Length: 414
Image 1 (tube, rainbow, N blue to C red):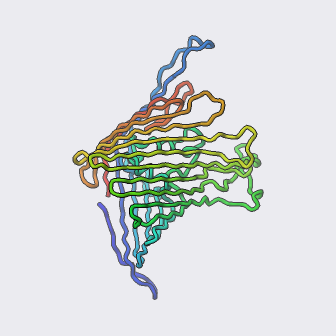
Image 2: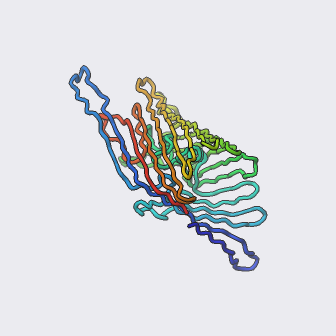
Image 3: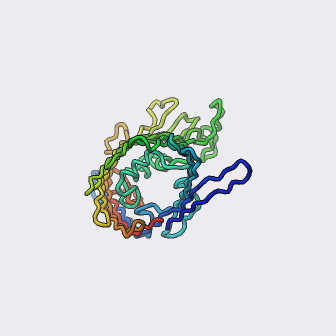
């Protein structure tokens, strides 16, 4: 049940006047039964060196789980606003992830969103932790809203790094959200046009001159030229522009995230992402589409003789549809991603994967729904993406092949 509290603030001290504020508590409790299966296969065969090689077939890792957030991410939040007069308003939004399947995660942090903002005829200025511009296209133009086993393979691949680093594709910690950000949103009075810009501050120390930057300490205890306390890592900037009118919604976004850097090594690692998404509601069905491209790069102050670490590119696309059926809705999507490792002199094929997902949502009311989703990923050439749950069998003899899964659950919002 939504609880809204409208209160008149009692101002203390002379010169203060009363102002009207609203505070709302909201949330989602989404729990379901999920099953995940990841299968690897031995693709080796006899050779001249070992003509009697015995192929070992397949290895499968299964997991059954009582999961949460498969239709809508489970959460608990508080938001509020104050009318400042003259068309101005001050607002806050604090939102925390919760895990109703086991109760282990409660309101211990507000990492889903924690912002304060000032809005008016000029638009909105928002400060704090929030979604980055490129994440919105993944969310809005995916029929499954990037949750559950049906989520877009684009989102899965860019948050699961199979090519380099950690923390997402290319070690990007800011693919989905960014902390310490300053954002600006265009006003909603531009005839259907909308947009936003964001800059996230890295909050690292910067030394002048640069030679004063202290070296870090390597695992062996050496202090130079070991890892260095990062100077630029964590910085993000990006933007999104779009147009929405009637059944049409289309948007383009771009983001640049500094994933890591080292003064002594003279390197800076960046992940650049751009995507284009669109949807059109025909009435009997709503179509979705997204194109995405990300590049993980390492820039050098002095380029090594052999050229250094090559860039890694990742491209992907999604086609989806939702079809209203009585009180419910059918959802389906096909998505594909491909890595370009840019490895010179290599004859190996680049990793790629595709995914098919289909599901049904049955609305019991405006706030309560039953849902079911099934999905399957096919991996090729070393890609190792899963629908969720366990990773593939960890043995160099076996190559990741397919990942399948399903969700059955109940979602209630308040």
